[in-house]
Length: 77
Image: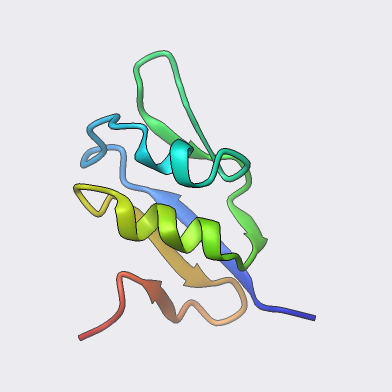
C-alpha cells in the first residue's frame, strides 16, 4: 500500500490561476470565487498532485504525509 497525503490549499495565498486543476483535475476544484480546494483532503499519493503543487505560481498548495505530518511539498530546507 502506498503513502497517503493530506492536501491543503492556503486560500489567503491562492490567486485562482487554475494550474492545479490543469495538472490534477481529479485532485482540485475551483469554487465560484476561483479559489482552489482539494477534492479530498486525504488522498493517495500521486504524481499529478505533486505536479499541481509544484506548478502553483504562489505555492499555495501544501502536501504532508497523512500518517505523520512530514512535509512532502514544499520540502523542508
